[in-house]
Image (cartoon, rainbow, N blue to C red; front, side):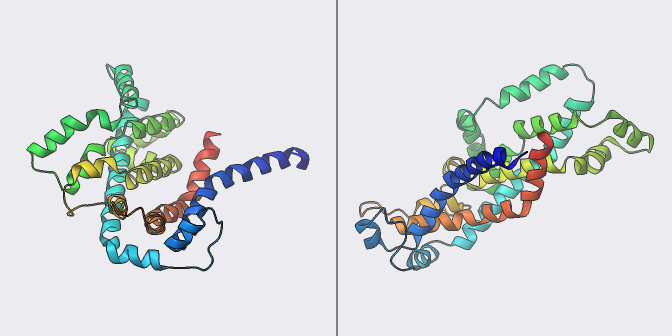
Length: 270
């Protein structure tokens, strides 16, 4: 592609990146301002001087390390369970022959249309009757199986030649060995993408931890950040923004670690 044709695409990419980065940059700038400065000049692009008082207030008010540990563990457990279950489910739908295969795939597609809020009441009643409210099980188990994960794995496996599976069977490999030791490494970009999507969604989830936790036992960091808003005295925006910056750090670190695999997955689909 010539430079003349590449320049508009580069400008468009920079504009799109700015549209995503500017809100985050505004949040970071607001977190290092003082509240009087925010009230006096809310649209000022830069602070008069850097102030870390909001971050000190966040760590003094919340047990950030415990909340973040709970949140990261929950998100990793959900993403790991989804990958572990999506691999055999996607393998069965892509490579095995059985009665009702098309119907099973149709059910998976139908599950993609059902939001978790629609099934909230019966799931909540089930966990309440089994005394699992305020436990990590209540936060992880409802999301252990993922229709989206099953769909992505199934679509990726359609491009894998059947000869590879047949060769593994001739070497004496079991179906579980084929799924987890032969095919899983081949689907690494897809699995990394699935892990990233699942981790980010559940790490930032507010609704489900809110209804499944009634005390501080397994409270997640998004719930803790929501508590930083003082009712009746106005919102302390610098503290709220500092809490959100702290909340975003693990996600940014994860993106930095897996961006190579993510780009590879997007390039493969392209």
